[in-house]
Structures are given as C-alpha cells and as structure tokens.
Length: 261
Image (cartoon, rainbow, N blue to C red; front, side):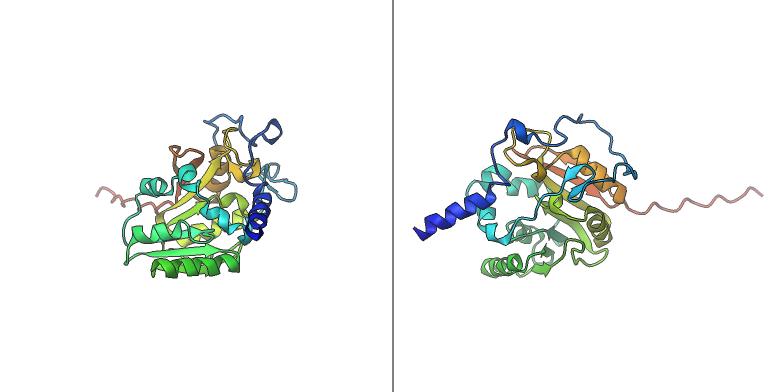
C-alpha cells in the first residue's frame, strides 16, 4: 500500500513535465520556420516578463524527489542514450562535463567512453542529487566521475579544460541563461563543444509540456550571441534534438607581407 501511494505521489508530481499534448498546450515556437535565422538579442526583445527569456517560459528545475523518473523503464526507448552518445564521437581521454547530471544517468555512460585516462565532471545544483550520483558512481566503479555541486549561474568547471559539455533536458531550466552560457564558454577549450539535448518544440506530437521543449531556432537565438558557433543539429532521436555548438578556435595571425625593396 505504501509503495502504491508513493508511486501515485510521484506520478502527480511529474504531471507538469510529461503529459499528452492538447490544443491548449501547443508548444511555443512550433510554427516557426525551420530555416529561421537567429538574431542577437535587442533591448526590445529582452523585455521579458519575470520567469521568461527571449519570449520563452523558463521551466522549473526538476526536484530530486522525482529522481526515480530519471531511471524510468521507457527512457531507453524514448531517448536512446547510447545512440545519442555514439553520434557525439567522444574520444577516449577526453574531459567531459555532464551539466545537470542528476543521479548520473549519462555520467556513467560517459565514464566508459572517456576511459580511465579521461574525466567526467558531473554537476548538479541539488545536494541530494549529488549524493545519489556519488553513490551510483561508487556502485558502478566509475572512478573517473567527479561529482560537483554547482549553482544556476556557475557550473563550477575549470577554465579552458573541458572538451565537451553535455546538457540533457537541462538548459531550458536555467534561470540565468546568459550568465550560465558565459560560464560554460569559459570552461571549454577552443574547439570544444556544447551539446544541448532538448525535446523538440517544433513537434506538437512530443508529449512534453511546452516549457520543457525548445526549438532549434530558439536555442540558436540564445546561444550564438554568447560567442558559440552553431555546428549542426542531429534529429534521429524519437523526441529530441541534439543541438551542437562549438567554441571557436582563435584565428591564426595573418602572415606579414614584406614590402618590395
């Protein structure tokens, strides 16, 4: 009886996140053209209401009390985590950050891919998530996973040392996107990648509430003005985009031209 009541409470808590779509829940930006060119923010476009950024509603952070949902039986089928990581072609020995790692669902998979010479910096803003992540890493023998208690504004990553930053269903919950993006930009090496995995806001058939979705156009409109270069989008997953940005490498100095004698 207690287990049934616990599961019912968990299901009721998760209703704001995962619900069947209705006409009243049409995702913001769903009708935007796919080829829309992102523009840098202007003072007019930045006059958002509290809780909004560039016209979209900022979603609430998923509580640690819903951590069981991160290991739901249907997640493998819905999100295909191994196929997603395969597509990123992560090199052994890399330093990878799993920002918003929760209980380490992706961190442990990353641990195997970077190998013993690599590092996985797994961050979360909730101490309870960090404790569960540490326990899961110990149980899996993942000694290259470092759990880091972060904040909404600071991922607590070392400067210019990270090869790839992965955020799975996380970025849309950031309460201060600009500060966080600037912080992540500083953490990446030149040529390093920022990967946002987000439920597709263009698709009303994806059964996720609108504030937990993003369109590619919206992601580019927010991320590119912070210095990132858009690389590509992968759309092979059932419900999600894999949106890849890069920290540009410095341009080589132009060769000096000696004047003719």
